[in-house]
Length: 172
Image (cartoon, rainbow, N blue to C red; front, top):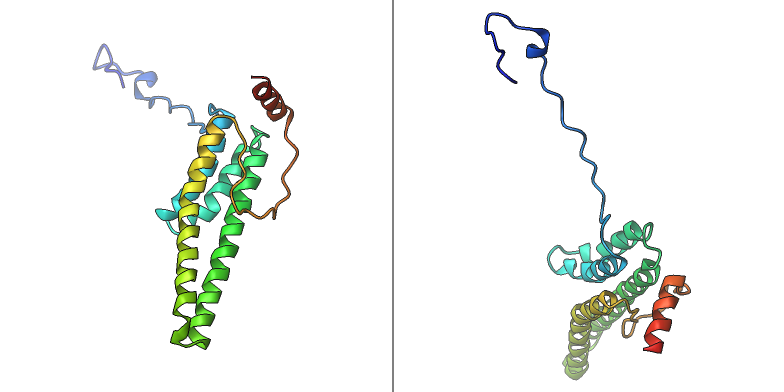
């Protein structure tokens, strides 16, 4: 509040509180390009290594938030969701086989267990490397299919923007 010019004489305007600031409007990713959204979508899968469980949810959340403004995120979102679901199925199958071998078979199955451990290691490496490769491809405006990903969610047809970029890259 400003000090009045004459301290003995106060007016109503001297006593009124200052106006409040206008409300803050938050726009989620308003200025981000579709490539940035797609890159964030793929990289958000790695959040599961920081906060358990988030790596499965974050890509779907980013996909749902971004596809309103950028319809070309649809193919990236489906690819990431297919990868996440496939990874869950593969990891679950290897885990079940490991438990079955450990419970019902004797020590003679050590080689089978070593193979299952190796498979689990390969899945873990793919779980880290694949989203990074997908993010790099997305930053370039390219679509990429994750290796070993089952097509559980049907991929949509490319949008007009994606078709235009693929035609331009074919001509180059």
